[in-house]
Image 1 (cartoon, rainbow, N blue to C red):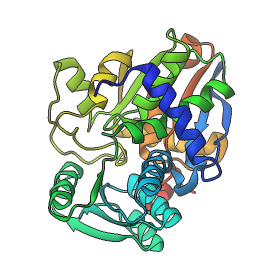
Image 2 (cartoon, helix red, strand yellow):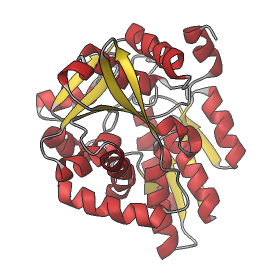
Image 3 (cartoon, rainbow, N blue to C red):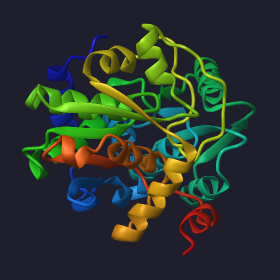
Length: 320
């Protein structure tokens, strides 16, 4: 399936209607990045479950529940998608299993357990967990829910683009952290449909730049599993992912941030705004600062994709 900006835009409008009353329209905050450099932060860290992932997973599961109330689902995630799925299962009453790599962050596992979701752990990376969950789905008949490789997931994330367009109608650039590509595909599809001239900057950690390398190579490539503070965006891309051609078409520029830059910008945002942001969000802020977003663009928007960061890690970074 080839997703065009028009298809993503229309399906995002449908998703917003479907999810009305279950999600928070997150605010936009104008800040000074550097002296005489301003930007807008789209605060998805204030969303239910502390992450944008609450959107796509809810859209998908609401659609499933409407057509098959007795359905059972299965997914895989390092944390934020799992939290979104767990909340959506609680809302709809569907049964579901969440497969995680054993090295998933302990604080996210504890959050998942509060929703009562059934958890299953496997060895390896987030991509290994995805592949294992898909195999389980084939044997059990459960409905597989991809963290990103699904048009309904993309449409749910696209509702962020709808809100950005309404909140900052003259936005001329958006900085989005890229993992599997579901978030940037939804946002870029909506905003490029509404304004083809807007710049979409795909932001990734140096330690996990799979989408950048894949777009440059013209095909999906693997990258050695390397630890990063941006655990929410880390990991490989599923073969045949529908997000890949969208990223090829709609991301104008890629930017990478190293671990020290991610750390610095988690601290900077907390000092400037009091907002707690996770590593993946720190990537987008770091890239915006590296590219002098407030000088290059009139109204740049930085998507703060989440705020789920381990308390000890956050205190070590900020000193708070």
